[in-house]
Amino acid sequence: MQVKQLAEWAGTTVRTVRHYHHLGLLEVPPTVRGRRDYTIAHLARLLRIRWLADSGVPLAQISEILSAEDEGTLRETVRHDLEQVRQAIIAEQEKLRRQAERLDDVFERLDDGEPLSPMPTALSEFYDDLTERIIASGNSPGSIKVERQIMLVMAAHGMIPPSVGPFLAALDEDDLDLCARQFADFSELVHLNGPEGLDAAHELARRSQSLMLKHKQPLLRVLADISGGAAGRTAWMLTRMLTVSGYPHPLQVEFANHLLALMDQDPDFSATIRRWAGEEPRL
Image (cartoon, rainbow, N blue to C red; front, side, top):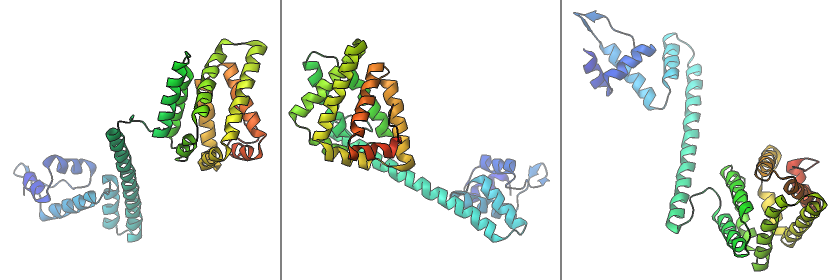
C-alpha cells in the first residue's frame, strides 16, 4: 500500500508517518516502481505506535518500549517505563484540576466585580479601605501601594493563609484608623534622619506592637497557618527580600527590625518567628 493509504488506515497523516520514519520508530519500506511499498506489518507497527502515543506515552519512550520488546528485554523494564508515564499523567491531571479550580475563582471574582488577582479579596478590600483613609487625611498612600505589591507576590506563592480574612474582619474602625496612620507615618520616615528619625521609627514600631497585641490570638492563628520547616524559611526569605526591596530606606528597615525585636520579647510571637527566621530574626 502507498503512504497515503497507510496513514488513512492508521487514522493519522502522511506527515506523521514521515516523522516516525525520521525518529526511527517506523521502518522505511523498500521502493517498488519508484514508490514506497508499505505492508500490513508497517500498518500494525504504526497502529501500535499511535495506540501508545494516544495513551500518553512520549515518542522517545515508545521507541525504547518497542526496542525492548524487539530485543526480548524483560517486560518489567517496559512496565517501569509505563508507570513513570502514568505518574506524569496523574500529575498533569492534578495540575489541570487546580487550574480549573482557579478559573472557578476567577469567574466568581468577575461575577462579584472583584479585582482579578491572587490576593485574597478581604486583603484587597483592606488595602482599598486604608488607601481611602490615608488620602482623606491628606497623606500619601505610597507605602500602601508597595505593601499591596508585596502581598500580591506572597499570595501568588500561596503564602497568605485563609485565616487572614477573620483576622482583618476583627479590626474595628479605631484599628483601621490606626493602621492608616501607621502607613502614613511609615511613608514619612523617608523624610527624616538622625535621632529624630530613629525615635520616630521606634515609636511607630511600638504602636504597631500594641495593635498586634490587641489582636494577638487571631494574628497568631494567621502566623501558625504559614508553613514551618523549609517552606516557612522560604516564606521568611521571600518576605525579607521583598520588604528590603520595597522599603530600602534605613529608617524603614530600622522600624521593621525594631518591631521584630519587640515581637521577639513575647514568647508566643517569638516561637513563631524563630520557627521561620532562626535565632536572629532581622531583615
